Length: 287
Image (spheres, helix red, strand yellow):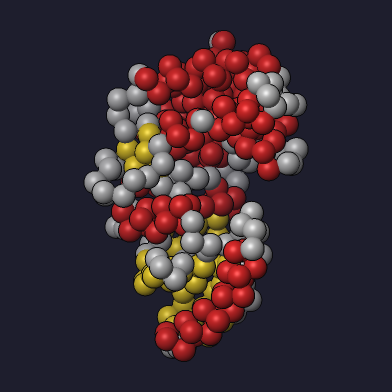
C-alpha cells in the first residue's frame, strides 16, 4: 500500500517497541492476529493491563486518535497515553474483553448495541476535520473511474440506484453527529469494570442511521431467513433509538453498494456479500 515507506515503517516499528518498553516498563504478550495495525496486550510496570496499538501514520490513524479523545467518557475504551507523531496509542485493556459476538440472544444484542451507540453519539465539538458520509460516498464514483464508466462485476441497476439515492439522502440530512464509523459486534466488548464498551472508532460525521449499518451487515448468515433478521433489526433499532425506519434502510442499501465497491477496489470477492445485502435492503424498502 505504501511503497518503499512501508518496509521503512516496519523497520522503525521494532525500534519503537524497544523505546516504549523502556519508557513505560512494558511487558509484551503475544500480539493479536490482525491484518493491518500492530496491536499487542501489555502490562505497565507489571501492575496495569493495557493494549498497545501502533499504526501507519496516515489520515485513518489520525482520525482514530481524535475520535478516541472525543468519545472519552461516552462508553469508549479509556486512552492511557498516546503520541500522534510516533503513531501509537496505549489503551486500557477490557477484561474479559468478550465481544458482542458472544451473545446469542438477538434481542439482548440489539439492546446492547443501542445503549452503546446512544452513549457515543454526540454533536461534533472538535475542530478536527473528520471524514463525512458524503466523502465516503465518493467511493462509488471511483468504481466508475476504475472501469471506464462501467460497474465491473456489480449489477448496473443497483449501482445506478445507489448513485441516485445517496445524493438525495445526503442533501436532506440535517442532524449530523460524530459517529463511530465501524460499530459492529467485534468492536463492542464487555468489561467487568465498565460494562459494554466500544473500541476502534474511525470517526465519521453523518446521520445516526448511517452508524447502524456496519452492525446490520454482521452476523446475519446464521439465520435461516436473513431477510427476517434484517427486518427485525431495523424495527427494533429504529424503535430503541428513535430513528427513521426508511432512512436506515436507504442508507443500508447505499452502504452495501459502497462496501461492494470497496471490495472490488481491494481485489477480493467480498462485493458479492454487499450485492446480496443491497438486494435485501431493496426488498424491505419495497414493502
